Length: 207
Picture 1 (cartoon, one colour):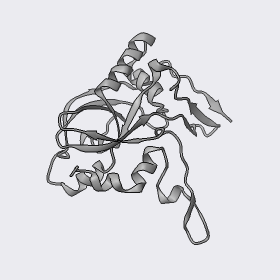
Picture 2 (cartoon, helix red, strand yellow):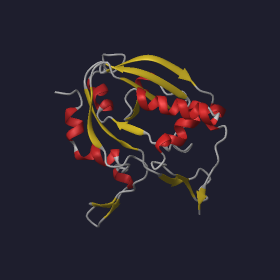
Picture 3 (cartoon, one colour):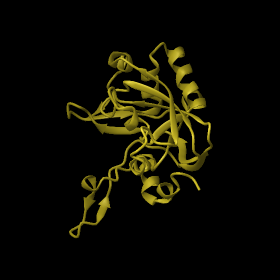
Picture 4 (tube, helix red, strand yellow):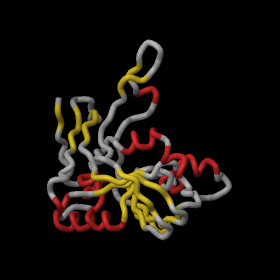
């Protein structure tokens, strides 16, 4: 039994993995309040079931100032092999690793300032969805059109497999006596200046 087996089996988890906004207030509903359309952007293509054994190393970028306990309960992660792709892209393009992650993972500034990078080790086996990242179209901060980010999965050097691990937040709520959720141990963390995460960023909008 995996720690997050129940959450993984919930159909909502797969919806979230493909980028569906499952928040009730975001859905277009019928006269009886039943969801008709849910907004969708980002996420991943054709997510598949993926097992994370104990000892797996994972990386995650979160917003600056995010408490570590909150950071480790988020759903989106990359494995060590995929983080190496980000690092290689960073060096090749002469940009910061946070901006490289922003471009390859399709994370617009509207979603995160990428101000903190954490590295964790999985302590208890977990289930995840794994798939190539999808393109993003989301309203810009100035509300003048949408920010467009394209996932270049047709270019081998830019293909990046992402992980979506459901249920971490719920598991943490069930273990309030622990300082951190028991399924992960934080090995390191690196604060990143806001300008480093955005230096070289170019807005592409669609009005």
